[in-house]
Image (cartoon, rainbow, N blue to C red):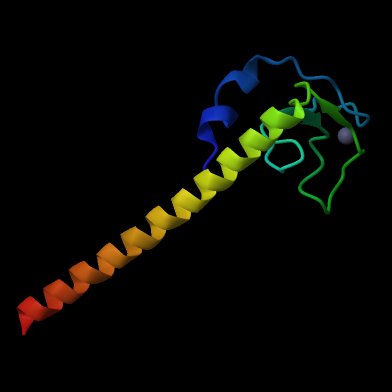
Length: 106
Ligand SMILES: [Zn+2]
């Protein structure tokens, strides 16, 4: 799923703290269901779950109230489903075009 809207926009306006390594912390957005769309600063030496860097993590946004969190999570799940569906339909359409082109050749 693409995240340009949030990754490219308002996040640049937030002043970044320094992590325990002394580097400027990287601003990221959480996409997990427990904290959907919640921004946080993290050590730039970290990447994913395997590499933790110095362990520096600070939330930027307050946590959504439970009802809003559930709603945002549901919307994200629904978006993912719809993106998959569009992908499947595009693939089916391409196959139909190929079949159609083959029939015209024979
Ligand atoms: Zn660090």
